[in-house]
Length: 307
Ligand code: NI
Image (tube, rainbow, N blue to C red; front, side, top):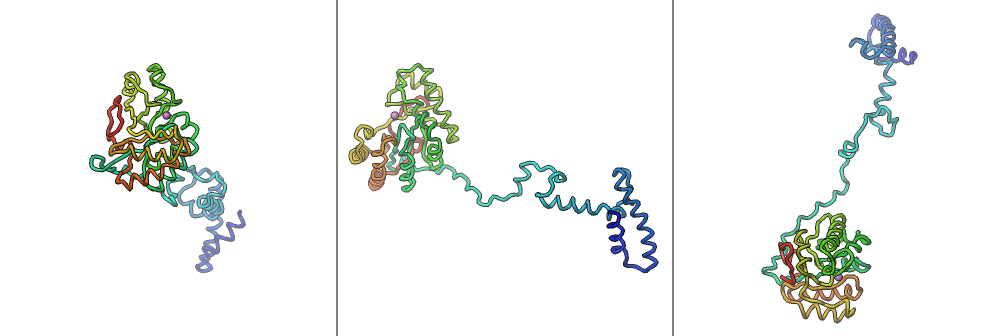
């Protein structure tokens, strides 16, 4: 280190006359000593005049520090600690995620002939295909899901919400709520609400009681939770007929403006019938909407069958 310091400093300083060089060389000796002193002594012991002379000797160390500061792959010891937020802040997102679209004003069902397709008991093995069909037509639907099924297919339920469908509560395990105590019925609703919240980020306030059976106790349980009971006005009986033609016929014949159509996305024939039902409803002038769009704000503890 000493040899490096002596040979380096004269090159920088040797721009003047020989006399100046001798004087400079004399100064160099002092500079070297001062530099060594600077290295040995603690920083507080060095005076401001020591700094320029000490620079050549400490330069290798200084340049090493400079490299470390610029190169994050170098020895991490001299690198100042960086918090995760500081590391992330300057990194631009290559493809910024599109801001979630604010909920559209929605169709005015006081003017339009609105109808809501609803699907119970899922999600199941055919729900993803149904979501594909609905997405291809730009049509929203309402899914009354079972908490136990959400537990098995959380990704599909998250997709429902992300694609603009409404997710309602159909209990956890599909009991007749009228046979349960208020506490038991409440658990069926609450457990499903919780898993839907965790999966979609939104709280379902529309409940379809299993089998469409309800009573004052059930409605009181829903009212305590700010939820309304959503039944239907058109029953395709798709779970019974398991037939695309019959399911389609029942959906179309029973529908009038404000209708809520009951189907089940756990049966392949039901899912197969949906594209034809949607196309024919639209051809007849209907606007397909979610149940929240169809009904607007609902009253807790109230029961709805259509608009
Ligand atoms: Ni059901």
